[in-house]
Image (cartoon, rainbow, N blue to C red; front, top):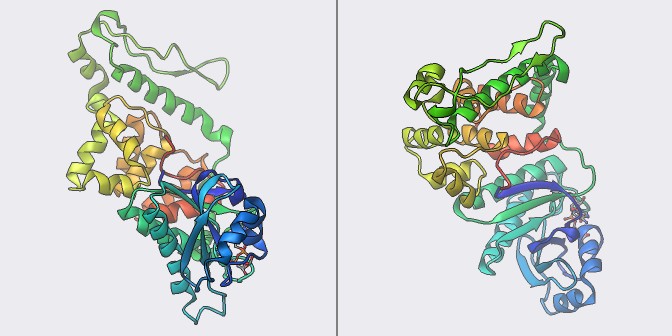
Amino acid sequence: MPLHIIRNDITKVECDAIVNAANNTLLGGGGVDGAIHKAAGSGLLEECRKLGGCKTGQAKITGGYNLPCKYVIHTVGPVWRGGGNNERRMLESCYKNSLVLAKEYKCGSVAFPLISAGVYGYPADEAFDVAVETIAQFLMKNDMTVYLVIYGKNAFRAGSRIFSDIAAYIDDNYVDENTDEQYELMRQAQCSQILEIQKPGVSADKAKSFEKPKMSEQSDQYEFNDISIFFSQSNSDIKDIIGDMLDESFSQMLLRKIDEKQMKDSECYKKANIDKRLFSKIRSNPGYRPAKTTVLAFCVALELSLDETNEMLMKAGFALSHSSKLDIIVEYFIKNRNYNIFEINEVLFAFDQSLLGSVN
Ligand code: APR
């Protein structure tokens, strides 16, 4: 996942470079500046003294000293004065110049705090939007892992209008766990039976009829017989038994959709917030079994409809469920044809949900 949004203390984040929200003197201060200097030790201040300060929006680099990173990139955010003094452009420059410097120093990973969102008074929601948007633009053209590190329990109403719309949508659609669980279990069982059938090596000579889960008489629990399925017919008959459910696997459908949409592979996996290595694994393995957030990330990147999304999920053994806030939030964006995965991840983060993309 090229862009992670995490809650942590940036001085604890192990990566190639961490970014400091400094002031123009570069001689330390409070907030994250103070925390970084404290954790790095006196060597950092000595090196900063030689840099001759830094202009707002610019970035300079030093060693990481006692921090778990190789470099510290110091940037100076704008002080918020109501929004009419070029604050947004200056803040964007902080992220852009820091990322360019990180790339120059061949950093594979970099961590940012929310620049200007503390002492400098930039409204946190807007600072968050600027950070995500600017980093996302950089990642569409560059391979790097970026952590946006949110400190403490800052609550976010990412994009206040959309936030309240989504909160209302969740209220209208969310069903608590047990109501939906029965059907979720059945869906998953049927999906995993499909996957079992697709597994290489489930061959004709050890097979029996396809069994469906059934509601038991005694209780309202679904009884799931042995999910491993055997067939007595030849492979070619398997397709008749399961019909078109077996016409292609998740990764085969993914590659077909990329072709149909006339996308380049790189365009697709970058829009999905998926890194190149994972995409290569999926591309080379027709039986690849992805995480649900990975499937949803590709559905968003491919701008699939809700039906196509459910079809792709089914191929991977999943289904959208109204007992999952994550699923409801993604459903909201797909229904509104908003396929900006970084905007979706901002909202998922604000609702304390996992993000779309994948970590493996
Ligand atoms: N790890 C990650 N983020 C942190 C940490 C930490 N250890 N400490 C604070 N933050 C967060 C704050 O919660 C805020 O969201 O960093 C963000 C930026 O806040 P500040 O550190 O106050 O930075 P900024 O608003 O850019 O003001 C810069 O403050 O510390 C002085 O010398 C600095 O004068 C400069 C000014």
